[in-house]
Image 1 (cartoon, rainbow, N blue to C red):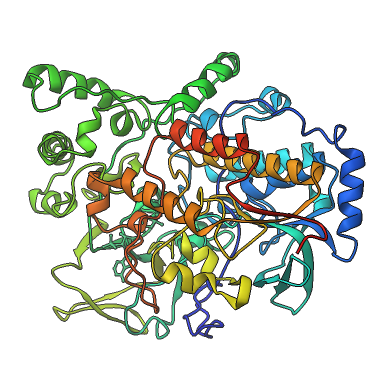
Image 2: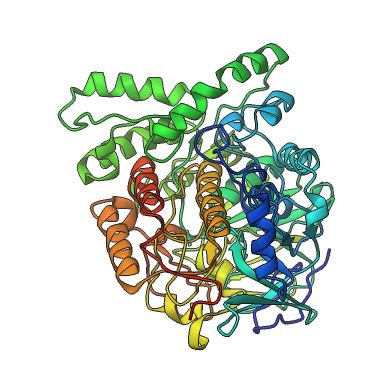
Length: 593
Ligand code: NA7
């Protein structure tokens, strides 16, 4: 696919189809079981009368997005016997795993912990073939789930929602797609993910380049094969770039990596899963999901509260060596919690990883460039790698430090840096990330009570109640909205969907047609989110987690995008709201003013 130099709707350059894509991200949740009372039988009469109340509306519930969030939401709405529909911008389901087809895209959490847990049947029937599933297998899994649950009939693809308005007269939502078609419903579930609006770098000349230009999140079909023997340039060294670089370095003629900020990364240690091993994993599912449910950020890896600095050096290093040899996020998550909060502890652990990295790179000057100096280990989202550092020992790979020598412009043939060098390439890969978290929402014009724009509300800093709702936006529930847990994302999604489905079930039972967060609720929750984030070194660092993206045309305040407290604590607070019969909200029944 060639670079498309037409502008998108808001003047954002459009390369390889980028400009307001939708889709969802990976999902999964808490306990591996269905919650009770949501099987469509208990409430079938109530569902019918609820639907009757909504007869002037197209649907009882609309869901934007057909990734894991949208799939599970749709499943739960169908179980309730409601008229629901999923509207999806992509041509098929999958969300994050539909859009991100770049070479080497894969989970860096264990496959069997990063999926739906709610259906024993699915857990029984689906086999994982690798500890860290590659994107094609994950997409197949998602398609399998959709088929198994017979959900495609409830999904409308190639439908990009551009506007979502709350209609005050009827307490309903009206959605408008990019072809001007409208859809109305009582409740709205946003399942639009947190990493779905790819951003191009704000470098002059992005339109001028005449070769192939691909953003990793809009990778063309068969793109990897087209790289054979080619001169390839890649901008960015985040999680996506690391997976791409290590996968394509052997295939391309030459690879030039333009790096502004190096990231800490450590070995993934992926492996195949044999049939026998899969059977063992299957037996272990209850234990896997129990661990996830109890841990701080829903992973199977659990840290400790040891005092890193006070621990004798040999003991400390022996422990870290052990963790380093393990699979996955063990070396990121099964560490002492003070590494995330104490500069001295963090510096010790960063030094341990620095030694590991240096040992793998032949040229010490290249090693200097690949070792982060402006942030400590684990203070940005830590990607995992498989042979990443060794790539920089290859003759066909060049690392260009664009912090000391910035890119001046993209030219017709490649990249021009301020030191006067031209790097001509056949393919230019933008691994430059996303307008994260709020970007998915800003791509749709959300309009609440009195024409309140969500973009304006959050422009002053994100405010939510439970990360699920926003004041002035009644009847709207966000799956993976800001202020939710961004740890094991599938686990968070499964919980958010469960909570939302239980609310909607309750609303059906009680014929509640209006639910709005209060000022007090939002203020208290937002303060709680900020309180939880205090003292975390990650919140001192620029990253998409702290809402920093200098490529955006609009100004964006640095913001606490995620819930930083423990997941069990998050769920406890949400359950308390449920236990109070949702009285934290303004609630109205049909006909009530
Ligand atoms: P990230 O983690 O946001 O990384 C984007 C990379 O692109 C990062 O290295 C950036 O450097 C670089 N970048 C962005 N804009 C520019 C400009 N203008 N010039 C040069 N370099 C630039 O996105 P990913 O897609 O890798 O990962 C996102 C998440 O997806 C990841 O955390 C996983 O959870 C999955 P910077 O660091 O800003 O200097």
